[in-house]
Length: 319
Length: 272
Image 1 (cartoon, rainbow over the protein chains, first blue to last red):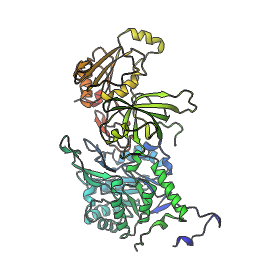
Image 2: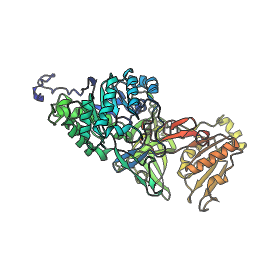
Image 3: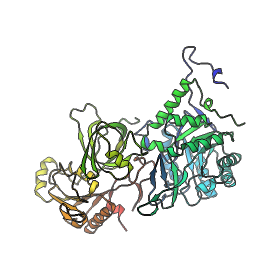
Image 4: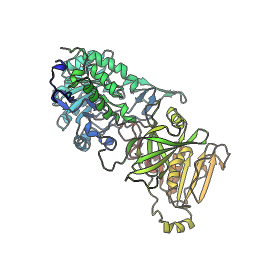
């Protein structure tokens, strides 16, 4: 549809009010700005700092069936325009999440997306079963965490593995299912297509890039697991390229993330074809960036007479 | 703001002063309007014009309310001791008066109040008896201890302060006994401060500084059966408990240094 075909609801003298809401696999978000998994805790951590209710959605910290203590040793290393982390999926386990965190997270207002991880297909499936019976809106299947020894990213590197875990989870998952892809896959588009064929309702990308830091004084790697995951502005152009490529190859909604730190960054992803975007690392030093991005998208749409987010894409629709 | 009484806030503020206290050691003073902090808490600090991505967690050195503040919020100045070590801290040390700084805070736990902390009427009596409280700090780790000392009655505590060489940051406090140690012997005792500290006479010990020092002080206190509170330091990204980058394994499981800390009971940390 041409944007000029849409009549202005405000009459001749005022431009149409941009509608920022988006539909992701049947879940209506009031705007396309989502707090990325692992950067927003369970929402309440940011309640005193920003108006959390204004967000489109919140992705939880990566959840596993059983509690995980996370990795030992140093977990963070700042780099030029980036952050390498080795948290290792520290979380209380899905039953404790549902009992202790979900009720308050639900009350915050934004849609709740549970990020699900696991070290075996059986663990993913059992986690998906529990989450499906809970009051979440969507599952984000994490097959892209680079910081755990078993599972995690191992499922996200090649199409058959990704398809196997997606199909198994799909069988028990009664919620909309989004799969979070790894930029470390040799062919991320092929992995994405395999996930869609296996039943994914949406795709999000990218998780962090496998990276390394070395302590030159101690003469050893900074992280106990040697490698860890790079996020932040440093990865944005590569993430954007991957989102662009994937949006040309699949028909399900794509949620773009990777180094988004401003309204302009977010708009680039939406123009590249993403239906919504996630903000992560940028929240840490400046929590209000989330609202600046929502407002920046609104102003851009207003200025260019767009009424719906879907009109922003410059990517020819895959059909 | 969601809550009418936020515990913390994000704000941009102005640098009031940046004083060089010793080689590579700066005192940064900034305006602050927000929740009133407590001794032991910290802020995430980042220059607005910055080449780094994340704020740096820095403990409060002192705070001073402005006279005739009109709002319910605290309004005044905050001061921080900063050692120029990495890119982030060097950037903070290069800030000049009038520069804009981004702050998130106040964050984390405060020092527990000394038990039966004497009222002003009792202060004179307290001053006459030997102090029951010891503050043991090293380098810029003295900041949260000096912050606490400024809230205690004069001469109600002893202070043990260790430095590499130069002595700094001890103005405006009145300990009954002051023990100074420097690694090069240029001031006070020669050596490291735990060698000159005996916890036996005290009812409670507060400590902050390099981790080996904290462990020595904590173990000495545990042997003497004296409660000891430790202010810990970890790399942090968010400062508010979301990223889990600052997790510390304790006797009762993982704790976030930024939320459940930075103040810990030493028995939770050094127990093996």
